[in-house]
Image (cartoon, rainbow, N blue to C red; front, side, top):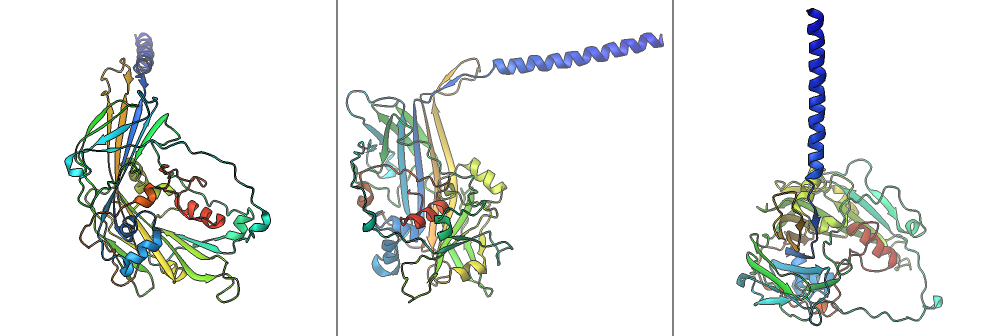
Amino acid sequence: MISDLGISKRALLAGGALAVLGGGVVATIGHLQAAQTVTGPVARYDMRAGTTSGMAAMMNGAGGGGGFGAGMAMAFGGGGRGGPTHELTLELGSTLAPQGGGPKADHFMPAGARLGLSVPLKTPEPVKVTASKPENPGEREFRRPRGRMLIFWGCGEHAPPGQPVVIDFAKMAAGQMPPGLWTSSVPLDRWVSLASSRTYGHWPNSDDRKTVSSDSALPGLHRVAGNYSPQMTFTLQHDFMAPLNVSSTIQPSGSILMRWNLLPDATGYYASLMGGNGVGRGGSGGGDGGDMQDLVWWSSATTREFGGGLSDWLSPATVARLVAARTVMAPQTATCTIPAEVHAAAASFMMTTMQGYGPEERFSYPPRPADPRVAWHIEWEARIRHRSMTSFMPGMPGMPGMGEGQSRDQRSRDARQNSGDQPCQPKKRHGLGGLGGMIGGVLTGGASGDGC
């Protein structure tokens, strides 16, 4: 009886294990069979809505072609006191060719946008490439850069051990790259682009002189229609974000304490600083005024992260990942201290930029079928991302962020709109836009930045 009972137990256990295993196999096969077929989308639509304040708003309202000099002139009496401004970028990309003539598309806005019935999405004309005369080596004297860049990161009264990382531009030009410099995991995100689309349209452009104003509002019904994409209709809930206002105070240690207003819809914050000591490697008055001066770069990230995407429009999911990694400050954070060593290294000039990342809304048509056995053929997808951005000179009296003035309409952006109407194509420098673009600009003698 005991032996028979033991055999029966073993048999039952074995049978149960097979049943469980069999059930798992069946579940796995069922899962594989339930994988839904997805095609498309035929067209994508990307909206980027931004609020700018401080010196960033002044430069944004200086016509887009004035750059930093125009912004400085406005800040110090050249353009009067200004307030926050809005920016809106629209891009439509499709896999279809236009029907019935040349490409044409329009975005029909709600009345609150104050942009009229619609704005046109212009397709850029093909760029004509002409052969250029080879440059005579004798016409341009090559001068190897001799400056340095000092890189810091992290909030705190003092920089931690191991900082700064020093980059010698002359060594970089000779091919001696510092190990582990390019650590970016946040590339620029261009969901829609001219290069990835069979037919493409964008706004702002030179076919339309309207610009978004400081009292433009986005919520409401939006419709995008054209001859190279399906018609899109969606309703936006989120408006432009509130402006960031930052105050900065120099502490006894030489560090700079920054405080800012918390934005109710922010998902995280990130700050970066660019500065310099104003003295070339050869010193002043030494006859080598063409030498590169030392530059300083600092970011609020606790990690050594310098991705150009950190100055872009980021999705809430990406920001949440970066907050967890302590690359981006949490949405409840309202202060950050720039280390004293950064202030000392950039004693002659400092410009700080802060990003407040915001919400995202996504739409697609037709809706996804609930039955996984029914294929989902996506006709179109649309998304809108938000951010609030400000720039200021930290520790400068009377310039807490310069976002407290009354709102005003943006000035005309004709300079940018008349520059050939080619959409922004960010330069790729080792996957970086911010710091990488800045270093690349120094080494090539061009402008720094990511080209956007």
